[in-house]
Image (cartoon, rainbow, N blue to C red; front, side):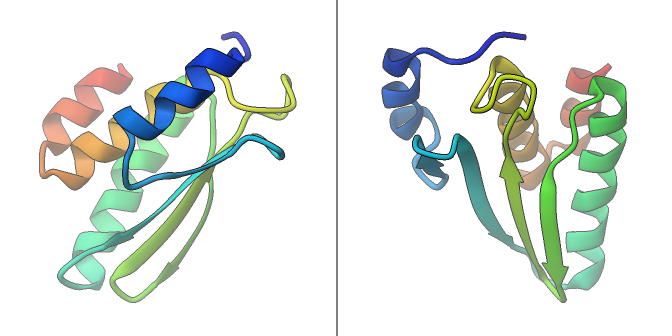
Length: 106
């Protein structure tokens, strides 16, 4: 794990167009909307399992079919490669590739 450089932070918008990058406080955030609560909860379950395997946990909240998730790395006081890996995993899980997301976390 390493802190992302300024050039890497600038490239995040292209790779993660639906995510909000806050370079001042060092966060990567996105709101996901699902068809219902069970889909949202299944997503959270997969992300939680992956988070445990990576020992990297999000700040998040859930209201019915919506999940708001934020990644940051407190140890580096900003965004790290771990945050990028976990954002990619979230995108895979959201796209319905839950098996791929869990395999990536292994």
